[in-house]
Amino acid sequence: MGASRSRTARWRECLSQIQQRGGGLEIALDQSDGTNAPASNSVVWRVRLYAVDDSALTIEMPGALGTSFPIRNNAKLIAVMAIGQNRWLFRTRVLGQAVTHVGRREFPALRIALPEAVERCPRRRTSRLSTTSLQLPGAQCWMLLDPESAIPAEVANRARINELLRSRTCERPSPELEAVLLPTVGPSASAELANIGGGGVGLRFSRENCIELDTRHYYWLKLDLCPWVPAPLVVTARLAHVHSDASQIVHAGFAFDFSHDAEHRPFIIEQMKRCMRLMQEG
Image 1 (tube, one colour):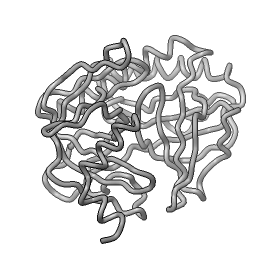
Image 2 (spheres, rainbow, N blue to C red; image 1 turned 60 degrees about the vertical axis):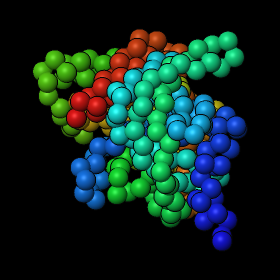
Image 3 (cartoon, rainbow, N blue to C red; image 1 turned 90 degrees about the horizontal axis):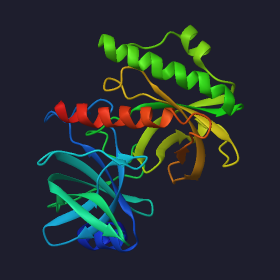
């Protein structure tokens, strides 16, 4: 039996290995309709795996920037575990909320059902998650040349989204408006929003469509969470880490940066919280 097939057969051992190393899973609400059509703009959350027992997994409650976003009991989830460049998908459901202790601190957690089986994700797929189940949201990334110029752009983004929420409409900005709202930026690249977690996001770029990524630079991110957020969110960020996989996909982790505009932090939290709530309402 090949190494990858052997690991698939020993998936419980793989989960325990991830937990012992302080690793995590990627989860998303299962919004599939029973067909093979992918759900549109499925948001993936990166969560820590706290415990594995005979009937359940205990995972970190999804969230961002220190705020947790609860998921209702019995909600269906799609999850992915990874060891190296090998990834496995499984379906599960929420059993209930819990509390876990890390050191002296308490953290909200979820207990989810132990999977009955796992499915290996082919390396050559562009998405970590099965393309028959999820469609990742789009994103855009620019090198930010002047962080101060992002302040009025973030203020305008808050005003625009709040106005659309009041009018209960959802619209795409025109190219002319996009240009006006841009801060002082350099080259840009399209990406996929791979996950949200901790204090930032993970983006995925194709190697042929990737700008220079360097931890010394600031970046300007545009995250498309429509229809749950009526217009794309924009935010300043710093590069935390970057690597390429065997499929020549560039994975980059960004940490949000609010040092120039502290008022944007609660706004980003509120919009991501809204996104989680509306996804559960269907």
